[in-house]
Image (cartoon, rainbow, N blue to C red):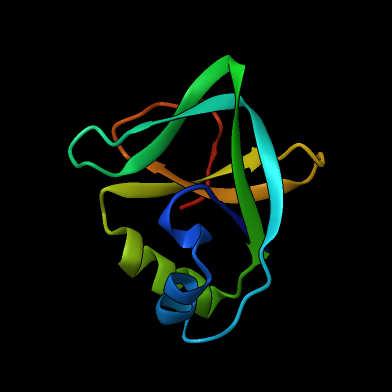
Length: 106
């Protein structure tokens, strides 16, 4: 399983603190979305925009990693599945208040 990140988790040292392990980040883009501000906090989220591209990265995650990421992202974000520009699926955290019309991965 893999997760796409586009904000603070692009930082290697922060990712290490959240996961308590090293993780290899592969840079990639997500077409059809744009970075926007979270609806309640000054943190990034993404929303659909067919004319935009989000630059970010993905890394492999375990169930234990997802539990740690859920704690880090809090209940204000939820996981969805998107198709990255390599045509492979990935989980991504999105503002819970945004409807992005992709598969929810609760």
